[in-house]
Image (cartoon, rainbow, N blue to C red; front, side, top):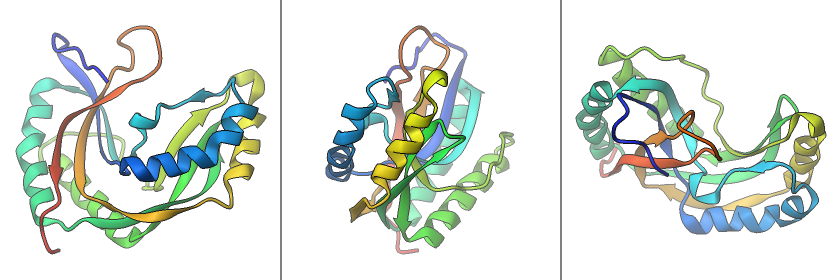
Length: 194
């Protein structure tokens, strides 16, 4: 989870993260898939997140501009009640777990976050919110692994948990060999009543 300090830009996104015990619960449900599909590129459990807005490569100065207003937004928002449920796949190659719970609150939070980013003059691809947690990617020569792993996860129903922090996250994509790693640039507690 390392973003090089000397780089002029950083790849960033704004996200929520399940607590460790909710992630461990999902990891236990994934054990059969870990064993059955070892060639899949499994995301590290500590990097699991629910993306609210993917901003891509930004100048470090733009990232700095986002920090105070994101902190203010979190301070006035209440924690969200969420759960991880089931599984699915995108394009038969990307395995994910679904998100359940206060989906309307999640949608409103994502809209507010995205509006804040646009209000700071930062443009990004504003994709529709599809709440999920990406778990793994199949290799091109074994695309059906994600489909089969998703079927094995379809009955998973995790416990309800509170999303208590808003995270501004940086990634090391394109910064060298090896898997993608993420790190919090900053995280803010949800302290409000709305």
